[in-house]
Length: 425
Image (tube, rainbow, N blue to C red):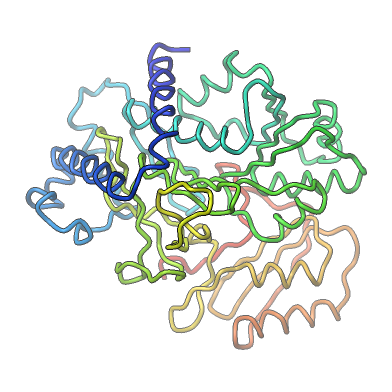
């Protein structure tokens, strides 16, 4: 591995030990930490021409919540502004988002940010039962990891008991392969986990040593949690990460703990005001450890629900009750309302035995469902499904169903169960 990667991993080890203490800090000490790192972040941002023009003065002198929201379309300009401060041949640790929101973007990171990201990720993994000293299987698309440090870790000899099987469409054979490995821990994209559960169910295979199931990169719905309990006998420990930073992770009590040492998270309504407790809102992210290309009130493209009640696990960072998903996952209704797609997904799965599906909203009252199924489906099933959709949405809808052999993924290899073509409309 490169020396830069080794330095980041060493820094991550130091930060990880600190995280084990900071996750139990009292609220005053947490607030003091965030204030200090936020001031440093804003000072670093003000030195970048893009932000200097945007803030029109010292941003530390203004109320933080009055600073402008950074949109996805602004990232390219910010990136260009950062690069203008360095020689043309300067090397940066960088990564591009997968573009599951429809707009890929490149982000630049310094060593402190990368060390903090690895430390926060290590906290999630270790607290969720993973260890490099016991067998684990990771069902992920390794080509998605383009950051130098990520690739170095996956390809290194530091993880001798961690297996990265090739992902194929034959999940029966994949289930057999994983059974031969007999892992204690399984980490998977939710869509890969769902397909693997199909493979386990159809073959009757049991993963006898499996004790921990971890997920990330995609939204976990209630149905998948129920299937995992039913087939594997285990609960899912999910994480909410992104290219921009490692945002939050789920403890054994089910709450999502924000990595508040690494990022500052705001949940705001459509007008930019803080969402009320229990209400779904837009996720704004401010990085606290990246001085190279800080993100200040960046609209990441996700929706979530904040939680105000303390977690019974004893950890004290801010909490998310639920991560609802990418903005392209949410459906738009009349009057500008947003609908979480889980009700429609549940209605679909209750009516038809599916291998895979995708719900696409083309217009306010127009939906298309693409299905991958083995057995024929009856006109009566379709009629009842139309009635379910109209009841949930609150008015009549135009619904078309298309049967296909397979459904593709995004360029970043993520599978979108639901897509709204109305984003930004």
